[in-house]
Image (cartoon, rainbow, N blue to C red):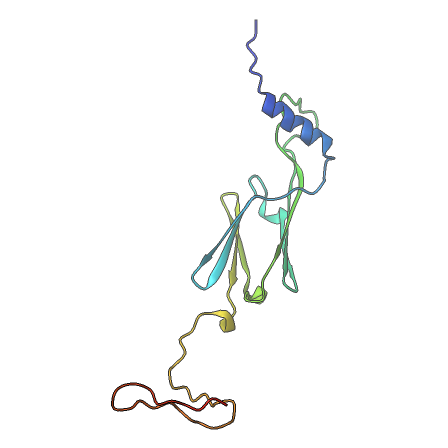
Length: 157
């Protein structure tokens, strides 16, 4: 007598995978975070060869496409096949504060890493006090402090 383990949730997954046609687009699990002056995005692509990964940037949209094919060859007898094959896709919409021109991509250990720099204009910067900002009327009036340390009253226009 053979002992068989039955997992009802795995059976539901199997049925859902069978209902989805082969080659249908599937998502890629992702983690995104900000590290200093760049955004780092990590996407899981286990078992995908580097040549089967495409990263495209158009305007402020990054499109990722990865393909994984079965390992079987002609004449192989399939005993168990629970892996998901086909094409996996994901699109990321970049905010105006990111620089898609500086995007870098790398694959290691089944993880696609995207590094997207923050635009210079969007980086935090210190504003020097007394930078010479003029009032709306075009003058350069400044409030002065009296001997008591209280600012003099300025007229309200």
